[in-house]
Length: 358
Image 1 (cartoon, rainbow, N blue to C red):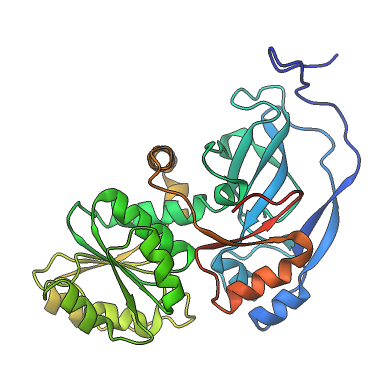
Image 2: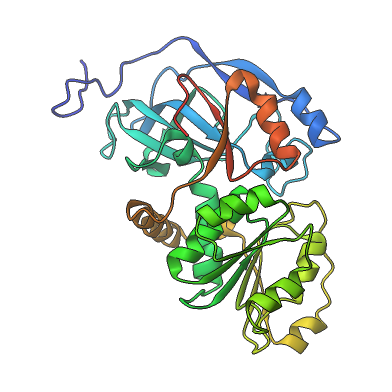
């Protein structure tokens, strides 16, 4: 007996489904990111025949790339999936089938999601509770890029950094996915945003996203330019996903009045800095570790409220992921090399089926 979605004429679960779908796999650990990109392969995986009561089947349209994927290829990320595993942790697509107890979705709904189970695959089967309706204003690639960058940015700047309207915010790595989204959130909060990045092209995008000032730290010393921009006040909050020498420069950009918050987001440059703890005493600032994924996993209510707040900002037109490149699954290596060479501006995505519009 068929079980139908109320009023739709569409089946909830069409019974056993045979066949396969394609997925991008890591099957061995590599010594370098470039070696890992070359070793990654597209495989045919069997479809899950029957949905569980609270599961949703999704035809994927896009998966976004994040820096941790390069680390996973080398077994250097804190989360170490068992081999073989599917790459990418964020995606978006269209619901094609729902389990008998699913109430939030029906076939045809546009959705996005994040899961360590891997999103670079043509079909996803996920629990209803981790699937999120995709706002009409966002493309599939924008939906696939929404979760990690914005939740990290919001958790860092708002929940952990207590960023207030009118404060000075410095964002490093501002041309990348994490940084560009932090620029948008900073502007949405009402901060005065200084975007710092490694190239003028990236900084042009930061201006489009609302940055009040920009600094190319490959050409200029952060302390000198930030001091000039702020008239010697320096910054109340610093969002720092780069690490290495850039982190060292940021220590010298904290507000002279005290009470600054230096947010440790990550180490995209590959070097974990050594921090002289005396600087926190001398300058009176907080060094704040931002582990959004782990923390929001421990606090489901906080995770839910964070997403509610972010979707409200998106519906108000204040958040819209900047997508600079899309590649079909067959061309995945081009996408990953773009990230490995640090040439991605905003976000880069792998697409399935017809490409979504930038």
